[in-house]
Length: 113
Length: 109
Image 1 (cartoon, helix red, strand yellow):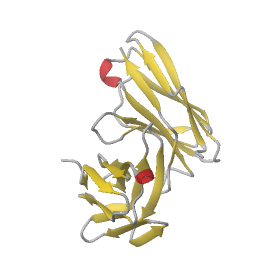
Image 2 (image 1 turned 135 degrees about the horizontal axis):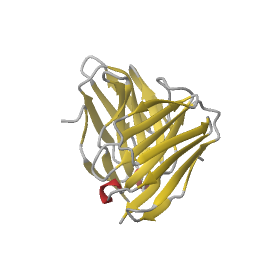
Image 3 (image 1 turned 90 degrees about the horizontal axis):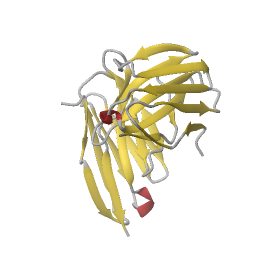
């Protein structure tokens, strides 16, 4: 039912690996978001892109590097992660970066060994 | 202390029961979301409201801006309602979404 897809759904990586998470939205939205959901903690906003421009970096470590080549696609490049980075990473989109309903993807379950 | 607090954290109900989940927040807000997250991770937006009450099927959401409180009610609960229900507000200094930790609901047949 969701218009927001994420790949892969599950990812296991070592601390020295480099991997990328992909998000695609088919809703014609202009704003896209990356969230991190760790066990027993609220969702944390990581990055916001509005019309392909980054408008929010919520003090995220540089080992997470976002990329937004167009309004429909959002990537999260990962390198030299730590075990505490293991979490569910959720992508969302909305019509614009304002008070609008956000539509979430299914998430990528990341495990860092 | 989180800016958005939910209660209870865990709730077990019997099928058919009336369920209430509460959300209190400590910041000024422009709107409040109720979200549903099923096992496996996918999140669905149930309601966005800034005043009064909204109803969709068996779900009802209310908000009291003066008291900084919102409730989500489920009438005639069903096992398929089992999920985590998350309250989130657009508020604070940056008017970004601030999330509660969620309420895990299990409805038993």
